[in-house]
Image (cartoon, rainbow, N blue to C red; front, side):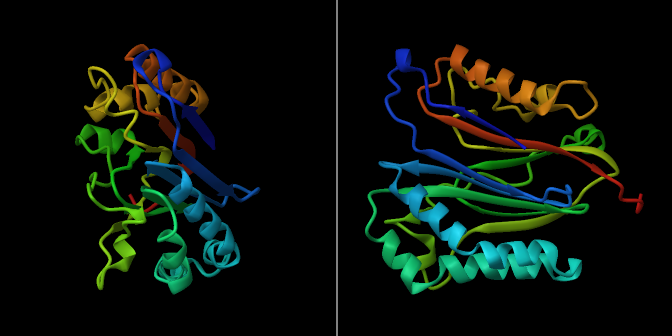
Length: 239
């Protein structure tokens, strides 16, 4: 798994980086779990989110290693137990600012995600690209965790989903909005990202991430940009 961090172009006025990333991966390659956070006004909300995720490690890992048919409901429950708890929400009320948060997990040939806010998850595969499908979620504005917290609502607002991976090479990318909103916005069209992360090309995940962030720098991106990327070969035989 590759984590790419760009703090923003100081020549364009960048003076802070409030993004955060956290990844766990099985040593045998059977699963990955990634958290991407884009905080506002301070990094305090990101710190609270990552501390809460760490405190739920046992339950999260159990969902990733237990029976496959229980993977999605168990992981969803573990995260909702954290985010809806009175203790976690009380800690959020003490921070300055709030954050978008994208959580993604892959187990065998299934990819699950939960998104609060405007981070984006992409799944790159030639069959999906042929049909013009790249992003798995839509950016949702005015959703946060922190001092303003969607989990304080009677019904929290967030998006979640599951995708079955196609046979062969799949490339997974999580990004904060700093990649999408820099300069002339060269990556606003996801086809440009697919050209970099094309799973049919010999370009490595690390090289693709480096090239993406070099473009942000060239475009004088003032906002920080953080990427999490990895490739997985699906042996799914359903197609």
